[in-house]
Image 1 (tube, rainbow, N blue to C red):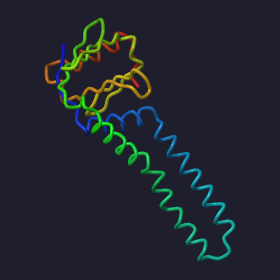
Image 2: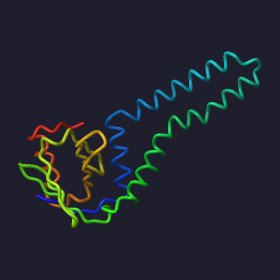
Image 3: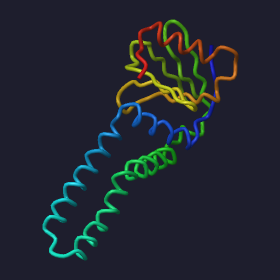
Image 4: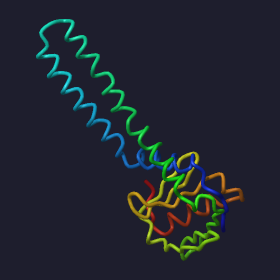
Length: 167
């Protein structure tokens, strides 16, 4: 079976968000930043001399908390957008096919064949199915490309049948 598609900027951004969510990496970073900001706030407030300085000190940590909560999202979107804009291959129509021997990604400029044993894991959400070759290297497959009956189910079956773990 095979699918054809062009990756969009939204696909790049979504794949980054999906990996961060699936790996838990983003949550750990946020919790670390919130804990550090909270510890700093507690130390400052314990040393404050007046109610006004306590209030101003507390308000000073609001932007830090906002950065801790939304910083990874903003950074991910900026990086993904830049990667997409710099990637000339983004303009190419991709054809992806799979069989018992592996997955083939073909573009006008060349093709690559991956054996199923090369994939560490795979994940999916409502928009994408992402196959991970390494922690930060993946094959992004937008679900909108799976237009034939049973294509998505067939790929899932190949992945699970070949022992590629779902995360």
